[in-house]
Image 1 (cartoon, helix red, strand yellow):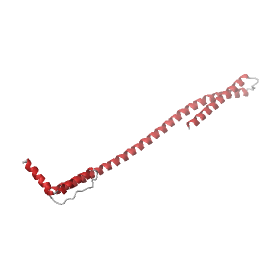
Image 2 (image 1 turned 90 degrees about the vertical axis):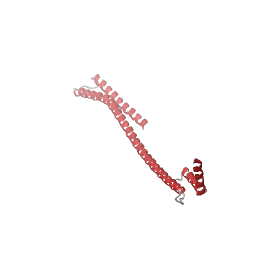
Image 3 (image 1 turned 60 degrees about the horizontal axis):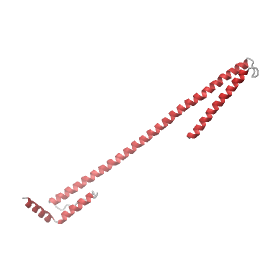
Image 4 (image 1 turned 120 degrees about the vertical axis):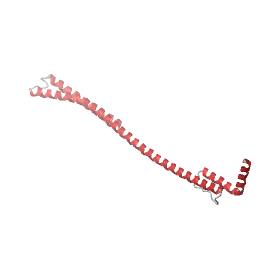
Amino acid sequence: PMRAMASAGAVFFWWSGPRAGAACLCGSRKIASGDLSYRMPVHSRTEIGRLAESFNHMGGELKQAREALTDWTETLELRVNQKAETVRQAQAKLAQSEKLASLGSLSAVVAHEINNPLSGILTYTKLVRKLLKNGASATQNPEMLKYLEAMESETARCGKIVANLLAFSRQSA
């Protein structure tokens, strides 16, 4: 029986003609190479004709699947690019926040460093004014000279802090 079926199949393909087999082979090669728009001609309603219709249907399904994958890939690429941009923006905001935090810390240190000598200068100025109100002169009161020297020193200290801060800002820019 198997030999008879094989013989019948061979007779059928021989009877269908070698062109049908060649068309199937040609069509399968085109699909395999990526030409999913290729369609086999359907000339009859025989098994070969139904095979050609099935082949054409398979090619159409493959083409739709490829288009769906291509669309999905483009959608994913767009989403990835959008997320990457969101991450870049978040990183930029974080960097800006860190800069502002550093600037705030630096400002606090500078304010403290300048406030200390200014407090001393203010105290010495009040003492000198009090001495002058009481009629003292720099020659009569050696403390007044000491206070004026301290004021001069603390003023120079403030100037040095400001000069260092300006030099730092020029290096950072």
